[in-house]
Figure 1 (cartoon, rainbow, N blue to C red):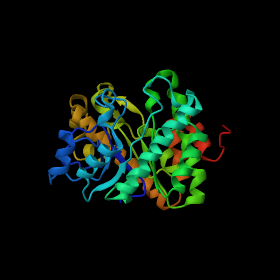
Figure 2 (cartoon, rainbow, N blue to C red; figure 1 turned 180 degrees about the vertical axis):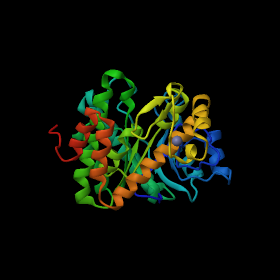
Figure 3 (cartoon, helix red, strand yellow; figure 1 turned 60 degrees about the vertical axis):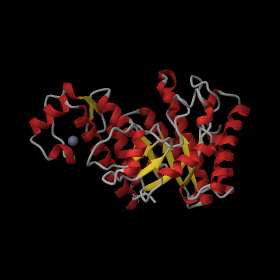
Amino acid sequence: MSASPFQFYRTFVPMLRGLNDPVVLSFDNTTFAKAYASDPTIHPHHFIHSGNFFSSPYSKNPELRTKERVLLLQEQLVNDQTDGLMTLNVPVNGDFKTPYWKHAKADRLKALETSLEAALWAKKNAQRPDLLYAGFEVGTFRDARYIFERALNAGLTKLSAGFGLFSRLAKFRSEDRVKQFEVLAAYNQLLSEFGDVRFHASGGSSLNALELLAYANVTSADGSSAVIAGLAYGSVLTASGRLVRADKLGEWTCNCEFCSSKNPLDVLNELKRSPEARVRHNVHMVRLSEARINDALENNTIAELTQQRLVEYDKQELWRCYAIVSEKLPQE
Ligand SMILES: [Zn+2]
């Protein structure tokens, strides 16, 4: 089991020695996954994905991503730090330029049914069925309500959905986020009926959505923003949740574990110069958010914390998502 009520896993993982923060592993036997599985000095909590269907080699060779092969290889990576295995999540089709909610209903449901079949097959055949998270690619409130209810009725108690796929297209970015929280609203409706359920939100977990996810009763999430921001965009996360380019910084004070152990001027120069320093700082900022979130969950103040953070983030779209999970539920 994961260590805390809300757990964040880092995806797009460069090896960061000594950090040992929770990570996502791909099911496939990559060098990286092997290192995590075999090097006793690297022993983080981890969540094992069923693979990015949109990237090669799986988009070119679908036979590399079958429910049987996914489970077989996932099980080779299981150790005492494994928190979950995501079952095969099937996309509507190979067209990743059209968001799921714009496809015909019959096509959407066919993909969801195939995912459910894969999850039920895994439940029957897995050595550790307790680790399974039934994976879905779902983009509307009604579809989510329908398929989650079927999964829960079939005895699957851990669900997972892939999010954020269409946020890479600027014209769908905002709607994609809203749809994500409509899906979570459907999950929340079912929670009162089914009780002890866990939910992993895969992808789409930009750093300023973490409180919202916890508020929506998501128990774990993964995302690459902390890493991508530090590596590709040269950015560091500030205490108010904004990403700022390190080379634009004039001064820097930060209480995170990475920065506070050094002289402020040295830290500033290191953040400007070193991608790894930026990633380490960003990962520590995510950890601080996660600690605040878990504290709020324990004290039943997650709604207050979420509101407070949304005021800081100052994004209309996030308030809309907050309203959606606060039971101002969509009709369609
Ligand atoms: Zn810092």
